[in-house]
Image (tube, rainbow, N blue to C red; front, side, top):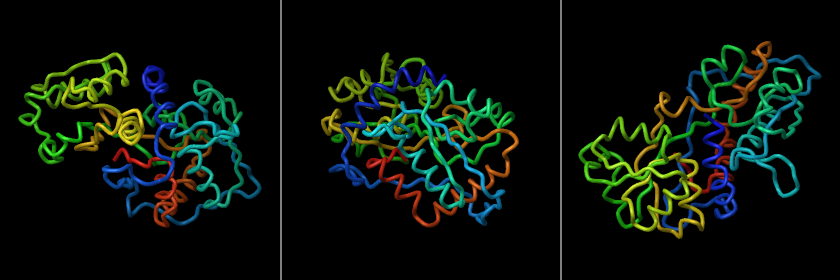
Length: 289
């Protein structure tokens, strides 16, 4: 599933990341980014004691911007990677971060070639049955994009079946986003495309009224040069776990539940002190939420 998503999104994500505004400010005419909050206020914040002297070896990959990629100097960076670095400091742990091909990450963790994964590993019941993991610190929302001139007609509280009855909605064929539109807006005219870039082109050229797709990719697109400032995000975010998953977190070997607890508490403190927001805005100048 992720391999198919990568084939669809990676070329566009690489281009869009390079095209996006460098400063952590919203592009002209776009709303201020919303900082997502995934933490239950009742969840533990107190530091968890981990045996001293341990270095946590994080593994990541360099192929999924803005979550994780290689910087100009070849050093791993991205939202997930920088969040891992700050969580290590907050937890009082020494950490290293090494990049490997994505498909080798889980096998490498299972072979004890690393201690934790900082990558877009989707949390599932099967994964949790065989590994320790933190709670989700990021999710992949679905969003609508619309031409700026028409955006006012698609208010968040008006995206019901009647509002989309006559709308031409671009989707990437065979994705959860297409299935979601078919389920909740059956009256909409779905216009499937083989790639996200083709669907974006159609929206920009006025061939469709809306585009429903991964909010992370759409946020980079509307805030970057490739969109030619044609469009903006409307409605949402849509976070139905049945379609879009429960999100991503740091993943550990099954015997490291204590380490997962330590990072859970550290992440909650990073949210409270504003560090999470600072990192988020650095990599999402136009937010997907």
